[in-house]
Image (cartoon, rainbow, N blue to C red; front, side):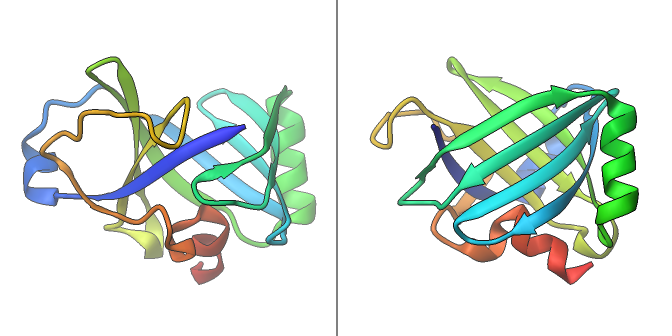
Length: 149
């Protein structure tokens, strides 16, 4: 199960933050059906195949498998017409990892921060560079954002 909250970024604070080196991500979708999303991703030098179920609240089932990066590239080129590109920063705050995605191309200057939790009511610290919560807004799902490419 994936329990995830999403937030927009306070860009003024984000710009001032000392950041680690980001990991480049390219991802595409074999299916963007609401009930079952199927994604192929290249994260750094590794490939991944992911199946996600329908979101209920901020929770959904997720099955992710590492695959050879060459197979991920081949799936993207054979089956996908759109590929989303972003850089991911992983930032530790008070025992939690915030994954901050800085989108490229027509999605720039969009920046989304995500935090995965162990339960929907888990408490966590929200850093000053994190802004408005968009967990309940499907327009910020990557499977929806890719449609604007």
